[in-house]
Image 1 (tube, rainbow, N blue to C red):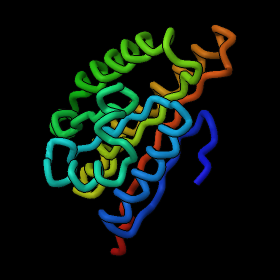
Image 2: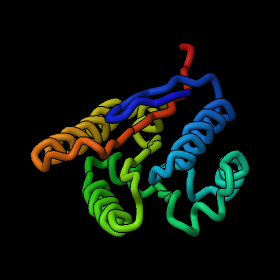
Image 3: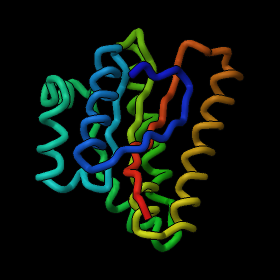
Length: 170
């Protein structure tokens, strides 16, 4: 799978195992390209889930230690989104900006690859208004980031936000 620069994409998968495999393949591709990869999942706190996904990611422990791969537990974000509170998402944005500043001096490739499943989980649990709210937040962050890049005359950096969604048959 070759993912283009500056994208916001959704991939549909048939099962959790298919979603994990797809997410890991995308992360592995990003890591090979020296991108900052972020796996932001509602299930990241679950040791069983993290064990499954980490076994599919090349040099998982080494990449986490070198901060090439960040694991973000989105469960608190999900819980906040349920009550309409997006403040934790803004804190995440600040953390990401700080991480990118740390990487500026050390990396040629400043691209960021994010896999996030908070909106997906809200959708699965039929929390449609909250799902839309989170999707709009991500989209707004993405648009502001692109605008800032254009203002600064930067076009070498890219961000890819990927939702790996389980396709449900109703």
